[in-house]
Length: 370
Ligand SMILES: Nc1ncnc2c1ncn2[C@@H]1O[C@H](COP(=O)(O)OP(=O)(O)OP(=O)(O)O)[C@@H](O)[C@H]1O
Ligand SMILES: [Mg+2]
Image (cartoon, rainbow, N blue to C red; front, side, top):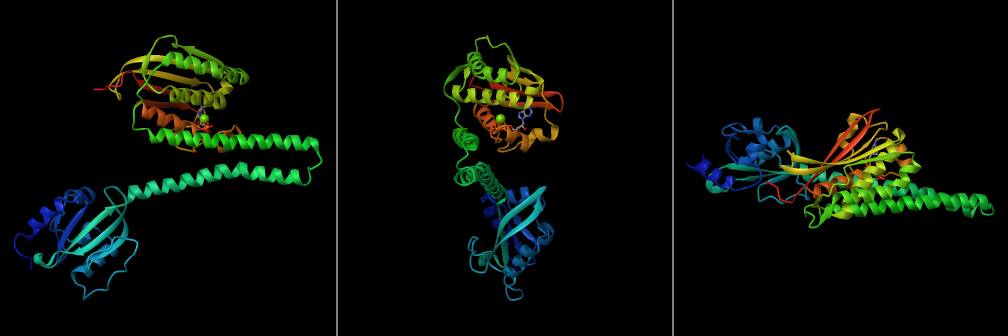
């Protein structure tokens, strides 16, 4: 049915295609599969019946129709998808392969007639793009929600001030104070969002300037001391007098340590202790070179283990209610993580419920790494 050498020629053609692609003969046996198809569907595909390679009824039906259009109903076409060649079909399909759920756009088309009767199946993996799209939707929903809450409160107070509280001077002052606080919260949120998007935009670009880390940390301590005193927390600084110069963006690193210290005061302040330590690591295995570690430590309530991996996600808060009451939006650690990434450093979080938390920022000492 197929001219001799067809499988080899089709294989040679498929090997040059980056997306998973395979070809079947008129009996729906696989005659060729490229490396991308083997990576997705497993090796040893040749000569296997197609239905054992990809058990998806709609894909199998499309292959049957392409091979024998008179014997099968034409599959429904989705106009949003790639337009297949004459006699071919395109569909969206979800299946498990490669140990995960894959969402793919599948194109089934007839082999060129010089090869005899056969079909080609191309799988465009949309899983990662789909996941990114979902994250984007979640992000927009989160931002809208975070803005809507203070806005709703303010609208309510405006109404009250126009109506029942119009002539009540004391109530008016109190409501204006609350409205000021809500406006400040919205302002902070916008500021954090802008700063996050700026950091993300330049994340691939290493800082070209140098910073004196000890001096920078001493500056942050000076800024945060009034707040620590107000929270009844003693700051214990250690090793900050050493003169250490490393590649870094001073404004961004200041933001990193301010965010970490602010968290330690807000969530770990009950312990009355905040440790800030700077020390050298002669060889940091992940960074493959010398590095400096800055540890911010508190003796507060700590964080339960299940939350740790998600702390740096945008808008993630352990106790939404409590964090929000303290003015938190859950962007602080996301900003920290992106800044540390930009510096090609590491962020380690270590905490146990009831025993306090330790956040360690590790920065490479030099910009050149082996
Ligand atoms: N030192 C800490 N001790 C206990 N919990 C912490 C500590 N640091 C952070 N967390 C928890 O991690 C969450 C995320 O922190 P993050 O700094 O990203 O957001 P936030 O402080 O809520 O808001 P923002 O920093 O944007 O004002 C916090 O809401 C809090 O639940
Ligand atoms: Mg914070």
